[in-house]
Every structure is written in C-alpha cells, then in structure tokens.
Amino acid sequence: MSAGDEARFAVRLTPRAAVDRIDGVVDGTLQVRVSAPPVEDAANAALIRLLARTLGVAPGRVHLIRGRRGRDKVVEVEGLDAAGLRARWRGLGV
Image (tube, rainbow, N blue to C red; front, side, top):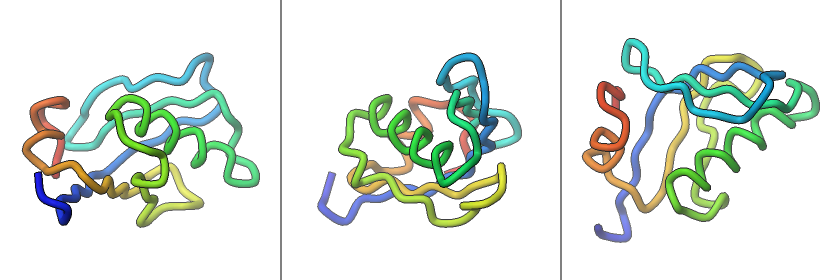
C-alpha cells in the first residue's frame, strides 16, 4: 500500500443499540450499530472507534466525510485500499 491509499464507503448507523457491532453489508452499505446515543457527536465517535479497531488503524485515520447528523454517512479510511475493504466486507460499495 502506498501512503496515498484511502477508501470511502457508505455506512448506515443505528445508535442506542445493545452493543457496538458491524452487522454486514446491505445494498453496498455497511450496517453498523453503536450503543452510544446520537447526542453531542457520541454515536459518530463510537462509529469511528469501532471502525478503527476493526480495521486495525488509528482512529485519526478514520474520517466522517458526510452525514454527521443523519444515519446515512460516508466514511473515509486512510491507509486502506478499496480492494482490501471489499475483501473484508463482500458487497461493500467502495
């Protein structure tokens, strides 16, 4: 991977879930649940931590590009290429 690798993908976030987890891909969108409420950016922060931990990157390399206030978001991860994400989550629209 080169230093310029990055991948963007769609996420559908469900806050106030029982546990933080990634449910899989539906229609090209990663389905994610977090226990944090959608207040004061808590759910977005939980999403970033969960994705960073799952992908093995620093949280600072996971960026919310679009959708800060809604459930539908676009996330960018630095240091990962699209092929790597598609291999991890089949059907992900990267």
